[in-house]
Image: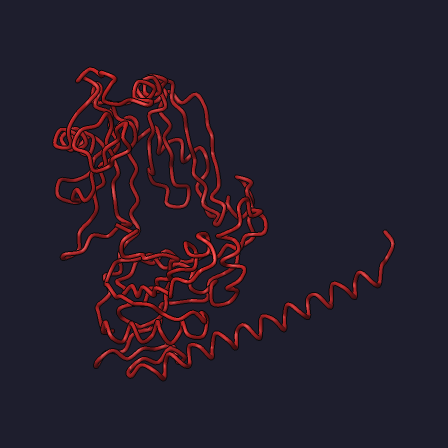
Length: 383
């Protein structure tokens, strides 16, 4: 291979530019954190500890790691972080035995999550059920009924309206849907009282989720802490009215830190405003603050470090997957203040208004750190 000095020099130059850019962005982040720490009494973001009342708390926010998008299922890194396919298959068989379903697995269809090394092992049974096992946690994740029978039921309700008569055996009300879902809840081994029903969505021809009668229903259960439900500890059960057929069961359990509230509502608002004025130049129309349980994410960090690219990804149709930025974050579920900032509505088009009209900051209720965000009013969309 011919040694090309020009190519080597170009690579060095690009590397140097990237290094200098990283330093600039790092300083920018430090400066903004410094502004926040001096603006709010009792909060010291730059020292690694936070003072809330008489107590001292360690920072929980860590700089997220940018990860390369790898779509292949079995990379060496993924294999190290996940159980083997055979181990996952045995977990699937055990779960199928537990609920009394056919354990004859005839096909595997595994996939890796785009923004992490987690592998979802998916197995198809002879009776047309698809069961998925979380390869990192080595636990049951979900099961789907993929039989043609359900497709035939869906076809009956395609463009179904008042002029089309459908037998009552294909319909049920919300009360009956919860009763059927509770039957499957117990079948799958979830303990009575461990989760509470928090949402019941109805499927019908009109697309009205709040309707009382439908041909299939989604019932969501969540764990409760005091007066608050954790959206990341849930069971979702989907059922058809016809023969009370199971459509899907999914469960996720990311432990909640249940961290204490040391930051006041007013302090959280001030923190968000101090950070935001260094990012967005738009005039603020209104703000609101509400406490919720959230999963830490890198949205606020990404928006801070590269705002134009952050919004370009959101507003560009068919933005290349390989050009998207992904961050690997620790799954931490925290008690936080959600500070929603709504900007003056003088946007040039509806796409920009939708993507940039609001931003919700997640302010940790214990440490006062910015631990995530969302490009919307998160307090309403997360329910």
